[in-house]
Amino acid sequence: NERIYQADMRSNASFDVMAGSVAKIGLTAKEAFPDPNEIVPFMEGIQKLMSIGGTSAENAKFAMLQLTQALGSGVLQGDEFRSIAENAPLIEKMVAQEMSKQTGEHITQGMLKKLASEGKVTADLLKQSILNNLDEINAQFNSTTRTASDRLANIGTVAYKAFIPVFQQINKIFNSEAMGKFVAKIEA
Image (cartoon, rainbow, N blue to C red; front, top):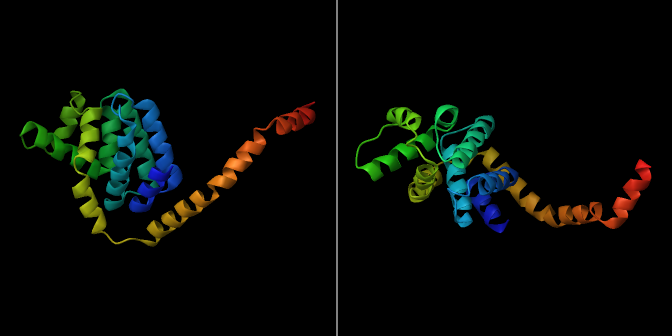
């Protein structure tokens, strides 16, 4: 939780969105992320790219759904590729850039559609596209102006963290034997 919190604060993301994405990737993309410690920096990079690109919350939600599915399946193609290309084009740009570095050829974003349909845009390539370019992503992100929405996201993250002990206590109460007996009496 602390690593997610710190990543949220650096990327102006929402704690629940970041935590949910980290959890989904951890469950669905174990092959792409055999080291779970890579998931938080990966998601921080993704969040920053979406912020840099001005991706709306709704478009980010669609892109994240497709991204987690692609990571889980091992390849980015079809609807997943199209959704990410449309909703988060800077991710597509990073993939083209990384593929160019790996192959020694100039790969354009336009060429990626064909390469994706051939199954050549893998989950590992997607992961490396973000993790290998974090310095560039951070430099671009740090040169952007923070918005009121960014500040509100940070306030929400701080508030969420402050209330975690309260949520834990409430959860403990609702999962207690006494609450179970109380609910059973109501149901009877």
